[in-house]
Amino acid sequence: MKNPIVFIFAVLFPQTLWAADIQATLQWSQRVELSTPVSGIVHAVNVEVGDMVKKGQVLLTLDSTAFQAKVAENQSEIIRLDAESAEAKRYLDRVQELYERTVVSTTDLDQAKLRLVNTQSTLSEARARLRMNQKALNDASLRAPFDAVVVLRQAEPGLSVAAGLQPQMLLTLARSGEMIARIQLTSTQIDKLIAGQTVTVSVAGISYTGKIKTLGLEPINTREGSVYPVDVVFPSKEPLRSGSPALVKLP
Figure 1 (cartoon, rainbow, N blue to C red):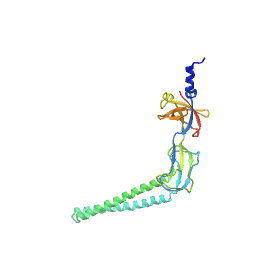
Figure 2: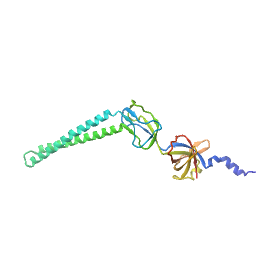
Figure 3: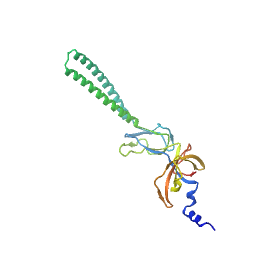
Figure 4: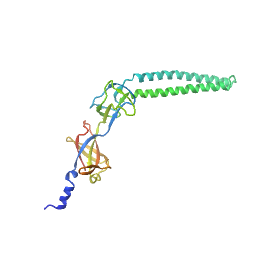
């Protein structure tokens, strides 16, 4: 006859909860939705869904004609103001020399100083506008923030983009080279693990060496009871899909 205590334990705690292989679901290790911080018309989209992109690669551009014109206007303005500031400095030097020879009054000297301050202030403002317009020109090109795969494309040439409090998502990227296997464990199981611990992840029969990234602190209520989420990060050169099944072999 079977031990009744063992039988009751097996009913209350099914073997699947204690199995070494835990069912997991793949997730992106990092997923970002991208938009441009400036408004404009989409000029070109350089990527398709599934494309692998490198950090800094230009993914999308807006029509930059207006931004380029503002930058050119600022540059011309700065050249003019720089010349005016240099002339105001030379004028102040002449007035200073005449003042020391008591040829001109203090008022003349003060006016010459004020002229130089005004031209330098106007020049500084123009340079600040140039920096802002150069940034706007750069922001008209959407670049990859890290090595990634394109998972969603929501933009086509000719689309009008309006920057505001609710940015218009144009492209969605997921970090390439690594994935997360998400599992759910009981409090007894999770208490045996530590962050950074090495585990094995199996996807479609291929094994990967992963590390526990996070151990959940808040429970998730399921039909079987409360469980805690655990994320295992692992490197993967092969393209994998978020939502795919996997197995995590616990120590």
